[in-house]
Length: 595
Image (cartoon, rainbow, N blue to C red; front, side, top):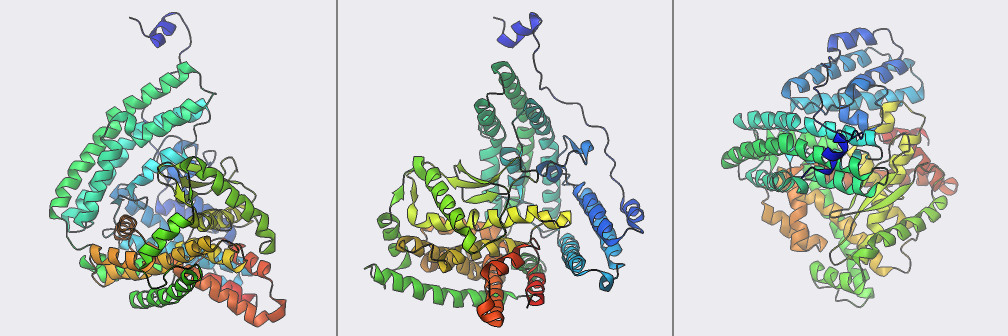
């Protein structure tokens, strides 16, 4: 029997093809020396703009995510190069740019340019420092901090599939995934041979992800599932085009992606046999110094592990007292364990059925947007939408051209969601949290790199501050359960300070860290285990949230104390937001300069 597509082709009908693309022409990027010559003699603004574009050019996935293919058309179907050689070449470029910036006379710059100078120097130095610790870095992890999760996210959430051209680009890029995964496999295997690998526990979790997403059947891979879902919903594709797209995607996945995932899993199996049992990075050679570097990167401060650990314990003592008072006011036994109390709250506060979760989050966000004028006079131009996901609770920012709105991904399905925690999550991920801050940053009239780069302590600190701000503004009035949800989230971030430093500086076991999360946050055992797995796989990152929020609150109190009755909350927020994401030391200088 002749197939439908073959029959149409035989009859002379035009059949769209999405076959294996030819290898792209050699793409020769400028060397560090060539870039140095190019930057010589440029004024400061041009130096920053041109040098950052040269760095961006080295990440085709970032170029595509930012919709800058017009600037770099040669990157049309490439993926990021993760080879060790390319990493070394990129580091040489970063050093060349850092040397060029060093030659600038900072004192001759305007106030705005000095902020740009300070942020760019911090950014470049941070990249150079990260390269020095590259062997310690967990390139492959089961979380979005590493691979292959980042590549999967690029295809499933970033890559558009609106037009036939989008679909052709998607399929073309699928054929490149295998080569990228092999680069990752080579780097991970080489580091392991020299004694640098994640702990056995992390390698095991990663293997589970690799098998589930790459070795459980072509149609079950995230690459195919996302494509099939989006193409099937899009009426712009006729049945013939849709069939051709999906058939070619299957061929790419079977020929390139699945074999590469299998090679990665085989390498991980060898690594797992010899990997260390200790879960903290302090067990690695020079692990204590590496962890100090991670804390400096994520918090953008010089805080030590001891100071962060002690701050978390102090924060928990305060938060627990507030929790207990609220539980007592609602008639609960204030002396009961937090897990039992929050289990009752999850039931008594109501459960939103899975089919209604998206609508409820949308209502919360729309209500928050209607209240923003009392605290903000600087708002993003782009919208935020709520998208259902099997495992949500995260935000992806809008495209620079506004064609893709900001997106808050919410968990749907199953038995629904306990309502007591929904407000706080929406405030954190959408408004006045991530969407407001990131959307505003993209709108600012600032050098390009300051509109798109991020510093964990600032970004996550702002989102956690947004949760507290909602309480300060009275948004939880009449919702005692929601306020308990807010306090649980704040305890969650305080406990992270203790657990992350406990694991990576003090030698805590997985079990001790999980017990601490259960006892001090009120999480279920499963939720606590999942969080501890994240901290082991992504050391240091969890310390940024509370560190950033504390600094923003400190600066708000300082401005309020000095300005007295003339203090304007909207002016404070404008000052915090109008410079984009910056290291906390730069933010502090910005606030002090306004006093």
